[in-house]
Image (cartoon, rainbow, N blue to C red; front, side, top):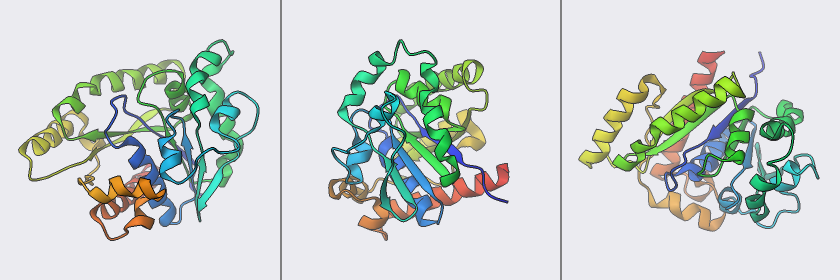
Length: 255
């Protein structure tokens, strides 16, 4: 039986938690495991696009949201495509605010492409505006990357409240897919304590794989590469591959 296309949003309104790094490397890891993946960069900062070596695209997600083009993804490597962003996207919140059905624009754009992919992964901005709402309305599941630090836990209630509201009002099928820890150092007592607290808060939604603090993860985007092409033997590659295997296993259990 063919797997249904899963649309996943990586979201956290706190910046610097490894959200874009995770979207890029989970996408790359799933493609390495022979899943067909489309990444969508919904952040005006375009960090996902730049970290995979795509700058100044001919058609960006902004053009598509404005209704000037269908989605025209750029191929990054076998099984991995990207719908890039551009700085123009920063004006989209205001420009689209008067559009009827503005929360559903991305969902409608994705629909014709679903048959081509096993996973569609959306990297949204670290805010809770219209671009993030579009991402959540288009998705089946939200994935939350969290730093193992005290402040990272402060926004958890807010994120879960937003997911609940979207579920009630705009997308009844949306659910929390999972939570995973980034920049983790098991030698630090604080990191271990936070991991324990997050496990208490989210229970079985917390992935066993923790993304360890690893310099290669910061270096790879400067070369326009995902971690698997940059340094496939490093901790970062091992950890993201482990996370991808957990995601695939979870999805097969859900079917």
